[in-house]
Length: 232
Image (tube, rainbow, N blue to C red; front, top):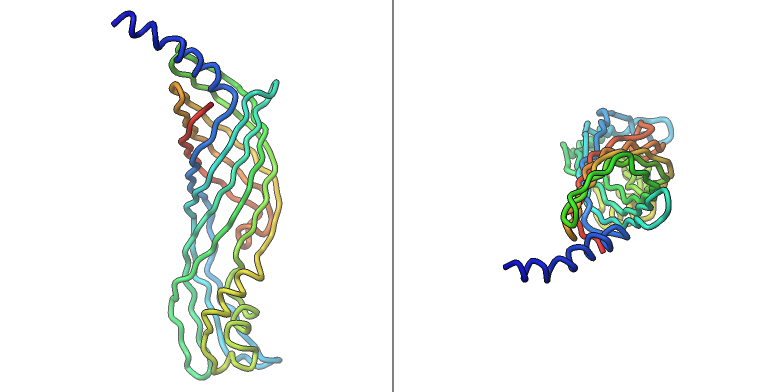
């Protein structure tokens, strides 16, 4: 048994040393925000022909991947891509009594993050486990789907003249979402804990995003992130 342990010891040492260079894996997050309910009139020229209600929704679940490089002096480089999905409902009524009551819809944000991180505190068990507290800041970019509004309804119902009596065209809706993505950039700060066990890697951290137009009516949002991956 002693010989077996000694034979694997160099591998554990090498893994621990090489593990500090880089890592990659799965990122899961819960984004924290709140969008209030709103109702607006849809008009043809100055005549109101319909109303649309965007019902309130909050928070969203995200999934993505990350890559970090821990071989740069003083700081670590972290790159992440993420997709956040938040379902919500909308209602539509027009003068022809066409009614859509609380139709399920969804808001989606595809985002990318580049972060420089600094180690604040580091603990280790030789050859086996490491833990460190980190803080960082960086830039981010977002591409999200537009919210339901008059322009969208005109497009998916075949024009403004059809708001009063038309029906929704699903194919046009999909095309509209693709062609009218909302783009935004911003910056963020984050802090959390990283824990390593041999080649296994995990992170738990909070991130605050400051960016206009990502969340409707807000200048940013927070997120709690859990990562599971490997180092090499």
